[in-house]
Amino acid sequence: MKIVVVGATGRVGSRLVGALRQRGYDVVEASPTFGIDAVTGVGLGAAIDGASVVIDVSNPPSPENSDALQFFAKAGGNILTRARAAGVRHHIALSIIGVYRLASGYFRAKQLQEQLIRASELPHTILRSTQLFEFVRDVVQDGTAREIPISPAFVQPIAAEDVASALADLAADEPRNALLEIAGAERLRLSEVAAEVATAFEDGRRIVADVRARYFGAVLEERSLLPGPNARIATRGLSDWLRDSLQPAWARTSNNLRCSETTITPEA
Image (cartoon, rainbow, N blue to C red; front, side, top):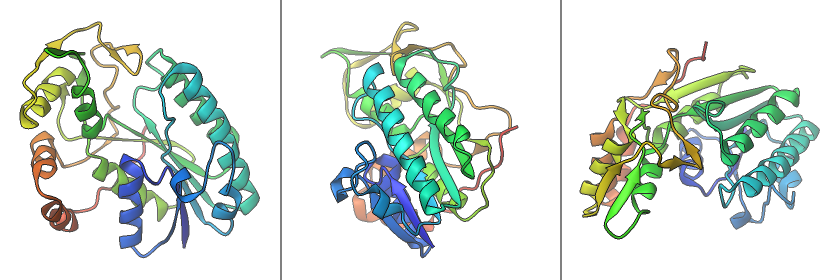
């Protein structure tokens, strides 16, 4: 079966490509790196032609309001148009838990992406995920020379590897024409996660829990980022992810091959 991964070089996309190939699928990596641009449409039609499944894990280069809206409007429209023309049987997209609870340009852009998919009449499944551990690590790299302000809102962060595995599972299933959720194993405060990550990566700056700190441009309420009661919960926690992240590449590869695959269940 031919599967096209749009955004194949990103955090989730690169892991998803590997997971799908391990399962024996014919995978096309769709990204500008490989001469396939969803925004302009260059190379996209040829990439999707003959595909059974398209998985969209793409993201704009910048989360700014106008950039993100333009990206998802153009890329989303192009992907869906090509998928319909090619007779794709299942369109899968990765979204974010809390997308309708947060007011910022990036989240409005993600709302637009979901709306385009639902209006397309293509058989589809939208998987909403909680925050990636990898994203929290990037946030820790921001801040001033002495401190990093970050929201103390509750989160259930998840490893990109677990999200990729869940998306690979969906590729083998029938379209749900629904929203699903997946979340990490532990409920923690975002500021606590950031402190653990900073310590593990030997960042000596102080983590400051600040309720005004913005997340993709949005101010968080305490429960803005939490999943619903029917979300599938992955097994990997913060200590597991930190251990894997700090291991040499050869050891991570060995451990990943031994990890069980994550499955998902429908959101209510």
